[in-house]
Image (cartoon, rainbow, N blue to C red; front, side, top):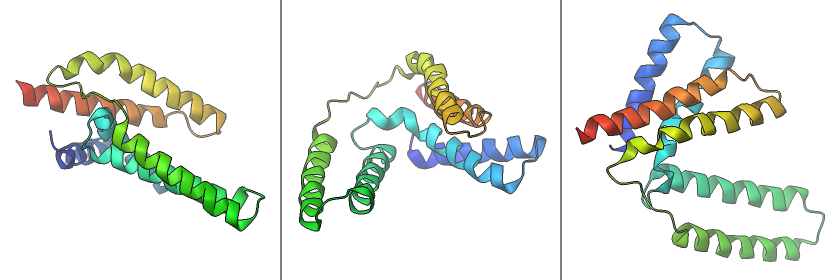
Length: 152
């Protein structure tokens, strides 16, 4: 299924959830972003997926910001470090040996609790509301259900 359809399904699910459980804006915007991200996440292993590109680009930019703002070294060393990270990031992005799961996508249901559990631990450590993991589970499950319907 196309990434746009996964986002549309996420938006529909989000509005259904919000219609039953009205949340404050400070809670609902991060919940929506988590729902959309987790609905795209199962396609991370596809070489042409949008979420793979976004994850690698954001990782690169966060590393670049960290290098320029936090590293207590000379500017030339920062440029050299950023150049090395750029080359390594591009190499990893192009050559990371990921295999897309193909037509048998339902076998990945076992990753849904693990994915949500990892985020629950991260949220607990960062003092973020753990109930956000419900949106992660719904997004991940919606992706797998949509792919399962498409295969039928």
